[in-house]
Image (cartoon, rainbow, N blue to C red; front, top):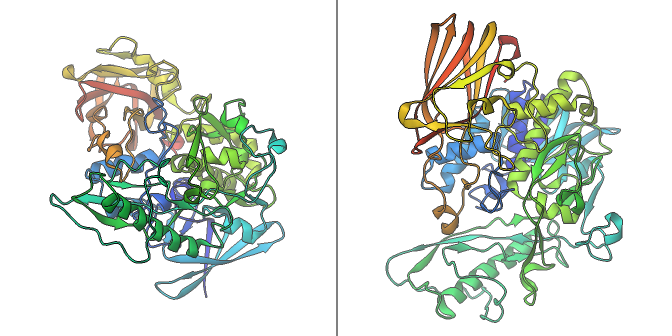
Amino acid sequence: MLEKQYDFVVVGGGLGGICAAIAAARGGIRTALVHNRPVLGGNASSEMRMHICGADHHMSRPDARETGILEEILLENKRRNPEMIYPIFDAVLWEKVHYQEKLELYLNTQMTDVVCDGEKITAICAEQLTTEKKFYIKANMFLDGTGDGVLGAKAGAEYRIGREAKRQYNEELAPEEGDHCTMGNSLMFSARDMGHPVPFVKPFWANTYTEEQLKFRDHSDVTSGYWWIELGGGEKRTIEDAELLRDELLKAVYGVWDHIKNGGSHGAGCMELEWVGFLPGKRESRRLIGDYVLTEHDCLGEQNFPDTVAYGGWPMDIHTVEGFLNEEDDPTVWNKVNGIYPIPYRCLYSSNIKNLFLGGRAISCTHVAFSSTRVMATCAVAGQAAGVAAAIALKKGCTPSGVLEFIDELQQELLKQDCYLPGVRNTDPKDLARTMKVSASDQTEGCPPENVVNGTARSEGGASNCWRASIEGKPVITLTAEQPMLVKQIRLTLDSNLSREITPSINRAVLKRQEMNPPSELIRNYTVEFFLNGNSVKRLSRESMGQRLQIIGLEDEIRCDSVSIRAESTYGSPLACIFEIRLYAGEECGK
């Protein structure tokens, strides 16, 4: 058995685990990501192909899309993968992890056991199926990103499965009595138009469905589907019966496709199945318990938290018990939330395992709150928060719960990394730009240049919070200090239109409403120029590479008293836009 030692080990390579691992490694700690599949991404990967939902609720809520590492990944995918080919997205995810400094990736590696010393995890045992290697992986801290809460369960962490009774948290959407019921598993498919009639021969093992049986399940879009082909969570459990559920889901998928092709007029005469998933996507199983349990009331925005580190906004999307077997009910009920809501740091670590962070869909919440927090974009931003917290915990020599003493530092670092925290503003004392005078050669109404230092890096509550000007004149924004200063790093937050989707998807309607390439609002080319006493001391030309967050590191500190950014071109918009400008001296740059 090969022994390995890290500062931080993340088990589970879904989007929550990916963002946690990258964030921790960028925070300077030695990190490992252990994933039991050949590709990263979990439900977003080519194995399952579910679009990445979040607080924007498919563009129904403006300016709500999640940013941070998730935005970085999805914008890179837009630049490299305009036709949205899933294996290419797999490669984008692999590249982000594999080439991240201080991060080591273990694919095809199943965690088999957990070693504990009292209330702390000391190591995990794992086996890599492709190499037949066995690992004993030790670390100071761990994060459960398995989805099923496997790491936590094996370590003895407190967890729940099923629905709480209404009286437990006074939740209107909870059942009168608690039970073990969860939401189920689904298999997806996609189809293509061949341009000529294509027959479909139903396998002998596929189910048969009538239009009456599908009356509550929309199947008008025959190009891809369907999240409502869902089984498990009632009599059949999503973990223990996963193999049986996969078999039954295959029967259901092919049966639904037979109905579409041979069961009436669905406009699918020229359509052919091009892909059917073989690995079901899970919605719900274990939920690990932290120092705070998020509830329905929190999702309705009834609580503000001093330790906000992430946010949600997807509706409380509670699927019917037994899923597809319950033909007389709508497959889900969309219970709206009131805008976006904060998620506290106390939901992201175990209440009883002292060095265990919680990530992905298994964070600390009730079944009702889980119906909102479970979507992947929410998992991603919570994962990034946990990864940054792990780096802080290691440097401060404290446990995950001990990071509460440094919550302001955690929040400010997340803002610096272009995460959005409701109610939290940039107050970073190391950011030199906050005290500088800002001017511009041009501006549009309502978007003055001083917005770039107002502490909020996206439009919010009707406020633009950005500087915007016509790109035609190659506008310049300038920050001027009262005294000369040393600058080693500049951070710009550009406009990537957080009201439009950029998620990978197999659904043609979802892809059709997106731009194929990087968002047209992004500045493409720009120059940065440093001045001292009116004289230019350095000039840099940069291409944004389709990214919202621009980090410009300098080889040596530059002594200057003003910095100008000139927008040279965009990806198509007639307007140039910058939400935030930050300046840091050498020792304050961070990662």
